[in-house]
Image 1 (cartoon, helix red, strand yellow):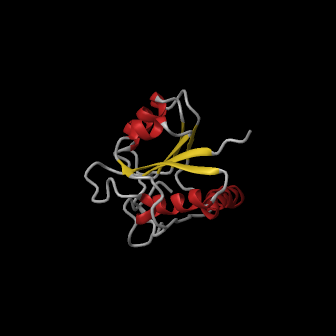
Image 2 (cartoon, rainbow, N blue to C red):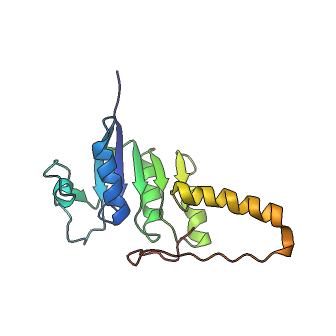
Length: 169
C-alpha cells in the first residue's frame, strides 16, 4: 500500500512558497497538507487553490503551525528568519520532519533552532538551488587550486522582490 507524502508549506503566500505548492499539487505521490502564513496575512482562510490560480482545492491558508504540522509528514519553511524558531518548535513537538530554506538567522537563533529540531529529521540549506550548490563546490576547488596568492571577491545579487537580501548564500 503506497502512502502519499503529506507536505505543508510555511511562507506559503511568498514566491518560493507558491512555487513549492504548485510542484506538490502537480506531483502524484505528494499531498499538500497545509499552507501557513502569519495570522494577519490578508489571504488567511482563503482557499490556496484560488490563490494559485487553480480553482478551489479545499485547502485554506492557515496561521496555526501546530495544527498544520499534525496533519503533515514534512513541513517546508520558506517564511522569515523571525518565524523559523516557532516553526521548528511546532514541528518538533509533532515529531515531524522539517526542511528549512529560510535564511538570515543570527548565530544564536540558529543554535536555538538546531536544538529544537535535534530529535527530528532536518534539512537546512542556505540555498536550494542546484546551481548555487554546484558553485559552493567549484569555489572550494578554485580556492584549493589558487591558494593564498589570489584575492577572490564574491558579489551576491538578487531579484528586486527578495525580502532577505543579502541572503544566507
